[in-house]
Length: 53
Image (cartoon, rainbow, N blue to C red; front, top):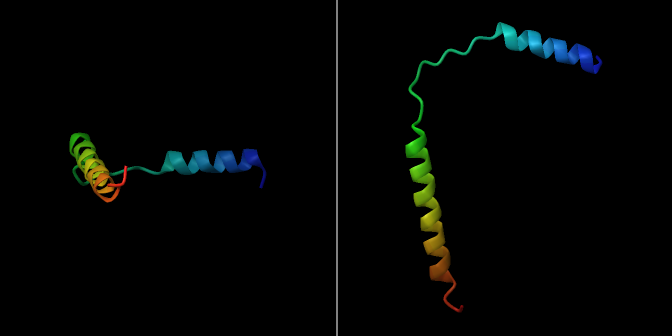
């Protein structure tokens, strides 16, 4: 199978599939806020263990 055959097969597969979204999406604000809180917590933990500086 060469590159052109693989490309056309993938295009056919992508065109035939349908995405059905039956659930509510996760809010980007909640995701970003949770990531910020986790990173700040990790920063706080790192600075507590690094008292020699």
